[in-house]
Length: 131
Length: 507
Image 1: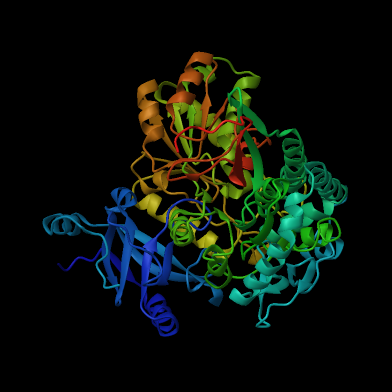
Image 2: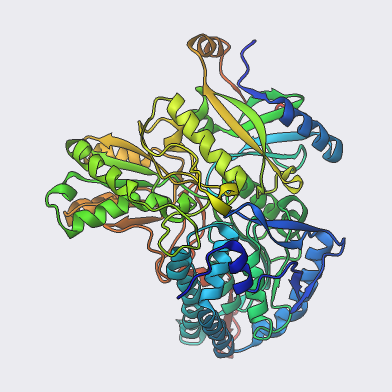
C-alpha cells in the first residue's frame, strides 16, 4: 500500500529521534476529550497498554501510531500529519518538558487515496509492535 | 474596583514572586534536583514566574509528609475540619480580587469571569463541603433484635490529585475540598501551564492547615505526574484531562488496585427547539445568550456547548440572531473588566484550535463568523487570542466530534425531536448538554433522553455546589461538586455487632 494514513513533518521527526534517544522506543496514541485532548500523546513504548480495539494507523519514522477504535470511526476519512509547535502542553507526553508539543494537522483523503485505502482492506487493530 | 491595566502592574498588585517552591509539609522548598521551569502568562506570552521542575524524589517527600500528617488529621472531629475549610473560604473571600487577578494572569481568562465565577465558586465549594461533612451521619441498621450493622465513614488516607489548567483554582477546590473534608491528606500536581494561583493558595492556607495535610508538587506529567499516579503510597487518584492520559492513569491505578475518578471532557450538544422563537421576549434573549456560551472561558471548558443543534423550521432566523449575538462578544485585554473573551491558555492550544478551523473548512463547514486568530496591539500582540467562531456543517464532521477546547461552536439542523436526540447522542462523550424549549414536557423528555451526566435545561454553564457533575460514556467516572463526592474520598467501615450471648450452634 502506498497511501499512508499518517505522516510526520521533518521538524517533528527530528524531535522524535531525539526523544527516542532519551527514552528508548516510543509510540503515539491519539487522545480525545478536553484540556490536552485531540492531541497525539507520545509515550515510551512499554508505558502505555495498547488495547485490542485500538486501531493501528501506521508508522511515523519507526514509531507506531494508534487511536481508539470508536474515535477512528470519526477520523478515518482524514490524513494526519504529526507536527510540533512551541507550547506548554500538559499530559504525560514525553516532549512536554522541552517546551514543545506534538500537534496533528489534517486533510481529507482524495477520492483516489480513499479508494486505495478501502481496497487495502480493514485497518489493523490491537498492538502491532513488540512489547 | 480599579483593575491594573498591564500585566506588569497586575503582577505587582497581586504580589507575584519571581520563583515559587513546592509546598510540602507546610513549607515552600525547592525541587531535589534543583531544576525550575518558566510559567508564562498567555496574555502576553511572557514569563510570570519560575516554578519547580519536580521529579519522583519530590513526590516521595510530599508523600512522606502526607502520610505523617494523615493519621491525626483523619481523626480530627468533623467540626474541626469544617471550621478550617470555612476559614480557608473566608480568607479567599477577603482576597478575592488578588486571586482573581492571579488567575487571569496565569490562565488568560477575562477578569470579569474570575471575579464573578472562578473565585466565588471556589470559595463556595469549601463552604459547601464543610457543611456536607458536618451534616453527614453514620448509620446503624438493625439486622435482627440482637444484631446491629454500624456504618462509619473513614478517610481513604493519602490521595493524589492532578488538576487541569482551564479553571486552575476552581478545579483544585472541586477536588481538595471534599478530600480534606473527608479527612484525607492530599498530594496535588497542578497543570504545568497554570501553577501560580494554587501556589498563592498555599501561602494563604499555610498557617491554617496542619503541615503535610495539603501538599503541592509542580512539574511535568511525565516527570512528576507519573510518579504520583503510579505510586503505591496513594489510596486513590483523581484526574481531570483527556482520554489517553485517563487510560494511562487507570492503567497505573490497576497496578496498585486503587480507585480513580476521571473527568475527561466532552462534545456537548446545545439543543434549541423551534418554540424558543415563539416570542421575542426575555426567554428568547436568554436562549441566545445560551448559544453564545460556547465562548465562556475562551471555550476551554469540558462542557463547552460546542455543538449547537437548531430545529430546521427556525434555523435561518435563529442563526441570524445568534450570529449577531456572537459578534457582540467583546475581545480585548483580559484585565479590562469589560472584556468578555481573553487569551487561550497556551500557544499549543492556539495552534490546535487553528488546526481545527482548518480541517473544519476542508470538510466543508461554513464559517458564519470568526474563523481566525485574533490580533491585538500592545502587550497582547505576543499573546494567544482567537475570534469567537461559528461553523455550520453536519455532525459527522470532525469539528462536531472532537473537543476543540476553543471558542468554536459547530452548528447543525435537526428535523424533529427524534432527530435531535439521535444527533445529540451521536458522540463518544456524555458530560454536558443543553436543552432549550418553552414546553416543559419536551425539555424534560429531551433531558432524560440525552446520555450525559448533566443536562442544563433552559440555562447553561451554571456550576453550583450541590448539583452533581460528571460524565457518561467516555467522559469519565465519578461525580463532583455534590455531597456524593465525599463517598469518592471515603471508605465505608461496617461493624457487624452481635449483642446476643448465644452461640450460633454450628460447631
